[in-house]
Amino acid sequence: MSGVPAMHPGQLALPPAVVRRLVAAQFPAWRDLPVRPVRSDGTVNALFRIGDELVARFPLRPGPPARLREELRREAEAARELLGRTAVATPAPVALGEPGPGCPVPWAVQSWLPGTVADGCGSPALARDLARFVADVRALPTRGRTFRGTGRGGDLRAHDAWVEQCCARSEDLLDVPRCRAAWAALRTLPREQPDLLTHGDLVPGNVLVDPAGSGRLVGVLDVGGLGAADPALDLVAAWHLFGQQAREEFHARLGCGELERARGRAWAFAQAIGLVRYYLESNPAMSALGRRTLERVLAAPGP
Image (cartoon, rainbow, N blue to C red; front, top):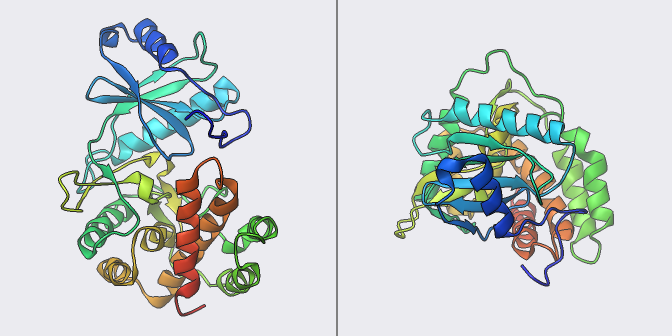
């Protein structure tokens, strides 16, 4: 959007005309389909509809094409593994595009899922639906996979430096002493469960609800992070998406014990505290999500 600062250093900006030329040159069968940008609060990809059934995804952060191509290939593999194995729809991988004039990065095409992005104040019915999705993902075989060692989903204490960095940069925005005290209690929560498959990023922007207004779950996006991790990682949804009543429903449907609930709260804290400052001007909706989630986490009883 004009006048809005980029979210990331060196962020890629693609005019729709460039995308149209890329589609026409690399996928001639789609050359007559309309291409239009999708307004989104997402932080990883720029999105463009291709006709009614497809969406092109372009990485916002440029990088070596070989590395980005491998990341896109892994995303497609994860989407393929999940496809048709959950009670609600997930995107199907369709094609991989290459860099071209005006576009220095490889890109991906997926099936378009209709729906409305969740607003972060979901109902108990949505909580039940999303718990079913998490249970479906957990039921998939890990095939010997374990946590890959980067990002969220392993040892909470590995995020100490990140949390402290966020606290130091947010003293004008957050009650930092309270945040530090909360993390000091959350970071030492023990782990009882083995790694299971997780979605890895159940924020409102990745949760689609019925556009007719029922509020029920109709799809889940950004499944490229599918992988083995602490199963409590997907419990971030309880804090990003739900108030207390719906959150209790979500936890109850998954049969979560107190320790698992608390670890989900810890993962939500570690994710949310990084959103408030980083996206304050460039993506206010994402910054507000972080603040709201932190408020929920800090207001809850327990460690």
